[in-house]
Length: 244
Image (cartoon, rainbow, N blue to C red; front, side):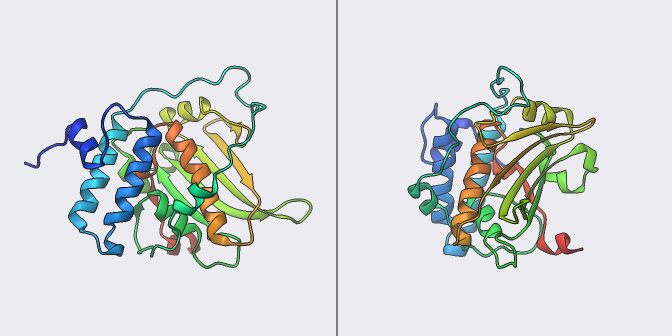
């Protein structure tokens, strides 16, 4: 039987000491994955061990996100979080995206969005169950009313200006509860329907699709980190399935 990592072992594997913040965990994981990814000559076993360590630390953090006081459907009057040049530069958006259903990480999400397409970004769909759920890996084969979806695409405003849209929709009770409590930070809008809760956000694409892909990735990553629902808990839908 394979040895199950302790929290301390998982943290050491990622080069961290406990306790640490979710931001520190995400940055450490990103650095290690970039160094050991097989596409860059890294060891596959080390790469999978890093994924397991990250998932172990994020899955144990099941505390409910803080409740936003006031009317939850109204975006608080706060300054939108804008990624820094350093954050944009640290993201890798030119990785190859192999076929099949893949667990996401920041570089994979940015690279999937930056693929060639006639829209400002390549459309993307990913699925999950709920924050910390043991069924997250199987979300792609579950009934749609039991899962959550992350949909990213492009459209135009009434003034015919191109915009990138991000929609995070949850149907399962645990997912809806997390989305109900999510901090909107001036960039997200919450919509409630009879059986789903949805967070949506838009941003204007830049001239460079890689920079746009990085900006979208950082906005999504920040929200999911706050919900204890990191990208490794999401499965990317293959591009060929989006065309069918």
